[in-house]
Image 1: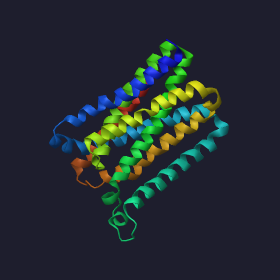
Image 2: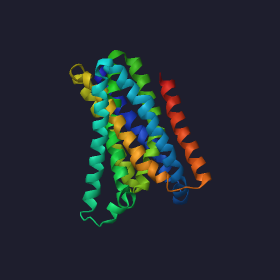
Image 3: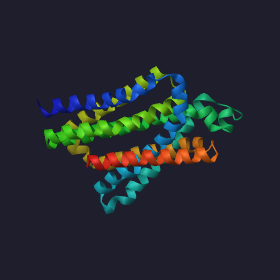
Image 4: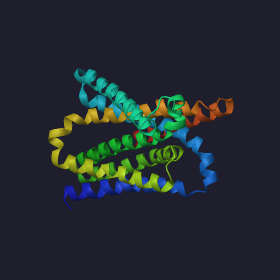
Length: 259
């Protein structure tokens, strides 16, 4: 098989299989899912922050070199502003009046925006995964296979948290699966573009990584953490902290294992 064939096969299977594997949780009884959602959101918060600060940003910083740190930091800042504006647009699409509930309680009207943002962030992340897989295959076929398997393993726990966010944002199970599968196809697109144009666009990879990190940081800090603060009793706080630490630790361990 040619390198292109390997890239197509593994970027497609890696993206779709990780989503389908994580989606198995959606077929649990609704009562179990409703009880598990708060736990999953805490886990997802830790996982998103860990993916950003342990995975994406260190790679981006390594790639740009010290002379471009300022440009990279501006990319992160620009990404945060972009997703703030995007969330505002999502809110305004549902409400065009100043006295709308969405302007009083963002999470009452705007919970759907967290789901929309997670899909945007996932699409960027999946696109970057496709670029990384293609780069590995162009280096060595065996390295490409290992990288693709590692990416799939890395994605499954994150996708479980993403499904929890989509369900809490009001998406049905069917739509959550369909949208995530569509988002996963960005892995294939990224792989194909990298195969044909990697030499021309490789210098943009660190900034794509930084932009993806900005999306995950914004979701965790602006949408998920305020939701967690709605439960103020001590047992809930301990539970949330432990689950966040578990999400951080699991992603960190997987990242170390991959390397």
